Image (cartoon, rainbow, N blue to C red):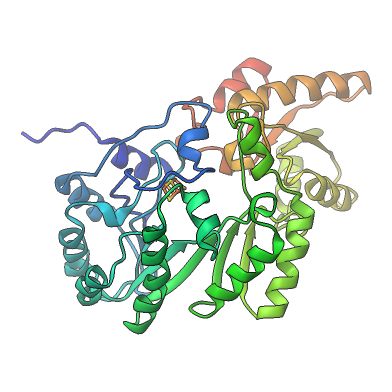
Amino acid sequence: MHDLKLSKYMYETFAIGSNNQLPISSVCNGQCIFCSNNMNPFTIYREGFRPLADIKKGLALLNVGPNEEIRIGDSLPGRISEGEALLHPDILKVLRLIRERFPGNVIQMNTNGTILEKSFIEKLIPFKPLKFTISYHSDNPKFWCKIFKLKENKYKIVREAFFNLSKNGFIIQAALVPLPHLVGYDDIENTIKAINFYTKDVIVYAPGYSFKATKELKAFLKSDYAELSRFIIKMRKKYGMNLELFPDLLKPIEFFPYRVMQNTFFAKFKNVLWLFSEAAFEKGKKALQEWNDFVPNEHHAFLAKNDTYRGNIICSGLLMVKDYRKAIKKALSEFKKQGIKIDLIVLPSNSFDRYGDDLQGENHSKLNEEFKLPVWLR
Ligand code: SF4
């Protein structure tokens, strides 16, 4: 009889309903100053290296089209600590297993690049197409070492890895966390220029920190989101690169509420309360106001602050049920004073997994029980 218990990796795969992720490691050899593993306000699982038997089970869940990537370095929704897939002691066996079933799909992994020595890169050639998303936050060795808390010999390996990967026909993407208060904008531009030599594809993550960050760390990690967005616009045009910034407060919002607004009317709701994260609030509110005249019922926007992480965390993916609870209480009381009786609450769906749980495992249905109001996810 097989053991029918699910590993945490399997549970998380089901919870997010992913069809292209096969995480294999939550072990990392870096100690980045901004690593979320150290700043999470609640315990995250340190699962070590995923056993081969469990990887085989995860492999059976992959359901990708011929042009889709298989991602083996993702940390899933944020309950298992981030890690380096390349450190897995059976990495070559894992790649072989994937290739047996998916001979042509790109296999993608996030990496800090520090084990991508020439001899190791050569061992990976039979498994192409492989795509490496290399975390590279400064091209200056002094800053690189400070950010990763690693020695300069590791910096040299990464620097050479860009060249060796490129020479051997691997796909390269870069991930950059710009730290203007630590390295300055000139250094960030130099880093973008250095990356541009090997790839035009860069994901830029604005530095985030929770209330757990020390004062010194906050000073390094603080950033003006609008200023950062303007800088990235300039770099995008100047170097002709695809620089995708998260969160990007100046980017037009992809939010089209009209159909949901109509559906709330057909379901006979009169006053609908929409909750938004700090990142989406202003634009979400504007979109609701613009469409409000085109539906017969009324729609009201309200801000849900992230009280769990605090710090500078503003995206909806990290909002918890308890953050929404606080915002709803406040909203209901404010609207009551204006004579408005809210009869439906609408929340962003990306705060929850497929089971309706937030990252701490609390289900959004609790809000429905507590406030005696229906809750929809959009
Ligand atoms: S490379 Fe990623 S997982 Fe490793 S310490 Fe840095 S941020 Fe954390």
